[in-house]
Amino acid sequence: RQLGSPPPATAYADAVPEPGSAALLSAALLSVLAQVRRLHRSSPMN
Image (cartoon, rainbow, N blue to C red; front, side, top):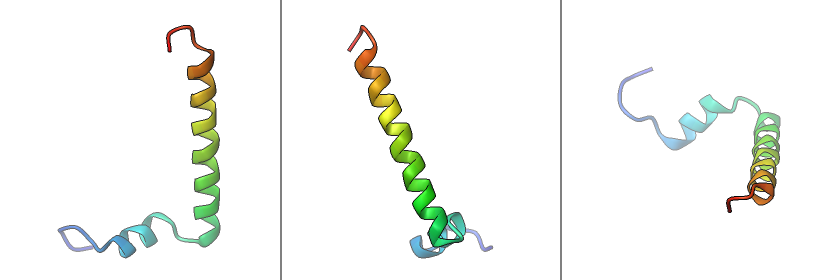
């Protein structure tokens, strides 16, 4: 790997090797966001 910033497509391909991984990652992010929002809503200090 050479120094400097790689093209976005290359960086994405390096981060997510398979299409299925992208779906899993987005699903995990969505669930985490939902949890955080629920925690913020239930916390006394809004």
